Length: 194
Image 1 (tube, one colour):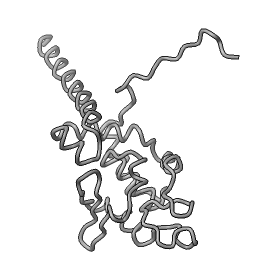
Image 2 (cartoon, helix red, strand yellow; image 1 turned 60 degrees about the horizontal axis):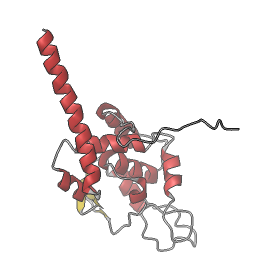
Image 3 (tube, helix red, strand yellow; image 1 turned 30 degrees about the vertical axis):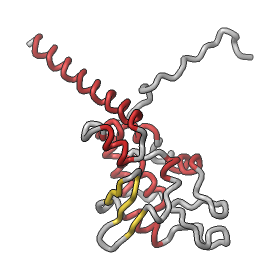
Image 4 (cartoon, one colour; image 1 turned 135 degrees about the vertical axis):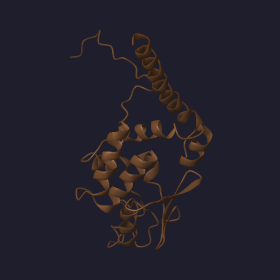
């Protein structure tokens, strides 16, 4: 029986934990150099950690969005093509060479980058999220990446490039600016007490 007076606080936007930059860098290193994940899972993890992509967007990528050439691998996210430098390109190269789930009648000519187990379908977001959870939770690294990216350029350009709505990126920009503002305030206070 649940207590009738039990109340649950509403979620407040911007309160979800963000993975700090140093831990993001460590997560990228772990994903790039791990044997814990398949090439498919490593490629998806790189898109989440490095480019702040939502799992729901990652699973919908097709081979029309990815180009694997001898010299470069590019991925189109939003309206922009991004080159994956080495060693970030390696999982995508492996995936292109052996996409998986292609030895059955369910995927004879599938164009999905992240093929699922159902005929002609991509992997389910919850399934991929669960597979990645063995190495990291997808939300905190994604939010940490967006937090860091908003420090590098104008909101509309970042939103357009990554396929986000500008207001979403603006919320992250405000959060990263408030962190900077807190730093400035702390530095001023420290200077006044010295």
